[in-house]
Amino acid sequence: MVKTGVSRTFVTLLMVVCIALAAEVVVLAKENRRLRGDMEAPAEGLGEPESFAPGDFLNQFELRRPDGGVEVVPFDGEFARTLLLVFAEDCGACSLVQPEWAEILDDLSDGTRIYSIQLDRDEQAPPKEDFLPLPIHTLTDVEGLPLEKFLTVPITLVVDAAGMILWSRYGNLGPLGSDSLRAALAE
Image 1 (cartoon, rainbow, N blue to C red):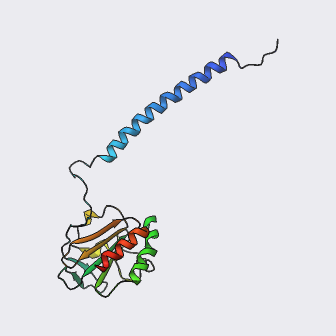
Image 2 (image 1 turned 45 degrees about the vertical axis):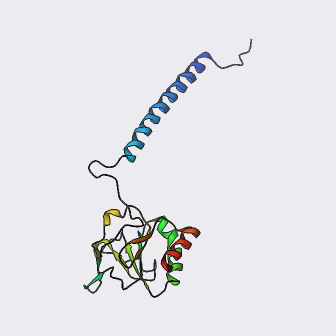
Image 3 (image 1 turned 60 degrees about the vertical axis):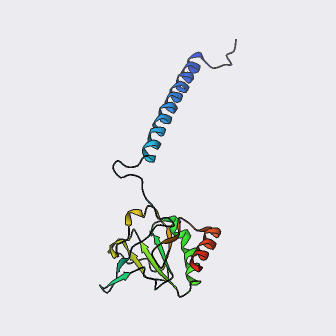
């Protein structure tokens, strides 16, 4: 008689391996649910993170210039709009939004002032000059902005003459976001 099947030992071993793998899947799924819950819970004592939203207000802030002077950025009615662009050099989404920002900067009117802030630059390294055609400030240059609200980048903010945020977007703009940003700047 010719043996054509697999041995009982092999079948038993295969069943034991399958049961062990199924048990491992159950353990990993439970650990995944626990970790996901930990990530969604706010850090103890910090409360819910805040972000910039339309209707919030910014107070005047200060920017240190390369010559050592300080530029006070008030919201006193002199400029109808202030555009704040916040990015990080090693941010993929920032690289994607950069052409959109550059296109919008080309279309801006004289009644809008623009500031860019790079969050991750090493103070010893030169700024990423080719990112935007305007001066780039770093976190150490900025005083008076609620930096704890810079949760993610890129951030695009439009602020009116009184300091009220009219428009905010985290991440890429896309066609609808670009149109919406242009409308907020034109109001």
